[in-house]
Image 1: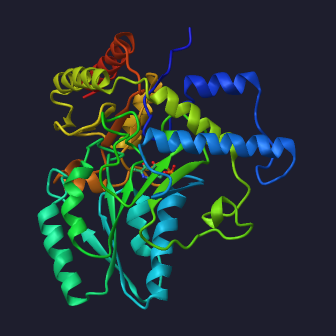
Image 2: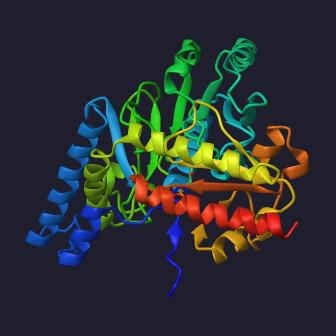
Length: 389
Ligand SMILES: Cc1ncc(COP(=O)(O)O)c(C=O)c1O
């Protein structure tokens, strides 16, 4: 009998949620261009409008104060706002400082390697050895930079839930940064939905960016909310769709899938999942013993377990987990699949194991039976590793 595969890579991408699957199975896909004036086009426009209204409601945002557009995903969303702020600053003849941390998702880290113009500089947000943002130090540094260039515009990137470790950096901690004038907070909210209790509470921020495929909707679509308090310059221009925020024929199916997936997400019991996760962490910590360690603290979200093996690089470990039906992922790999040193493990001071990071990210709804299966399979892998030592 074929081995049942346990998919545990939800932070990379999630399977379609129940309502999205049911809808696709029915075959009622809306294909018409929402910009067209015929009846089918109007039906598509209605779907988009209703989905947008539901999105505003889900996040308790006001349509008058907050703008919303759909894009292809957070990679495009984050790049769009960097380019938009670079353009806004250039037109105002001001300098722009983009702030990211070295252990952010590569889409944010890589902004510093792009050329946005001579007026754009970068600032590395410091985190401590446990990966927590050093807010006070960062605030003081930014205040100094602002004092030396009072016109400076600052685009501050904040990673809400870390994609590898699952660590949560609460938005409330950012309120002090708003004392700096012309500082705008861009919240990378990609890993938050369904994984922390307050994922709908966009407590602080000027921009919030999401990717739909992380919470059960279709791939190739994401969305950003952004406040009315700054000028916006689109990355993609053309037909002027979406109020000119992002040109290109609108993705009605994608938008509708977000509406459906969010409905499913609202039913998730995050606290319950956190209990299951804790059980798994305790189990793994005990079973790993001499083989490796789990990286954990009380701030981790409800579905992610980040761990490493002392003597096995992640590329080889992944193959072993995979033959045993456990579909997990490596913290860091190059495109060929070879293990790379993980910025996260380096920051944690674990240089000797920096190529060994592994991430297990669980479904957004965990039950006891599933948890037992994962534990049995983990035990098998650990025993195999131990017997081959
Ligand atoms: C925290 C975070 N930000 C941004 C992204 C980029 O999202 P996408 O690949 O959907 O564009 C990801 C994807 O893994 C992520 O986890």
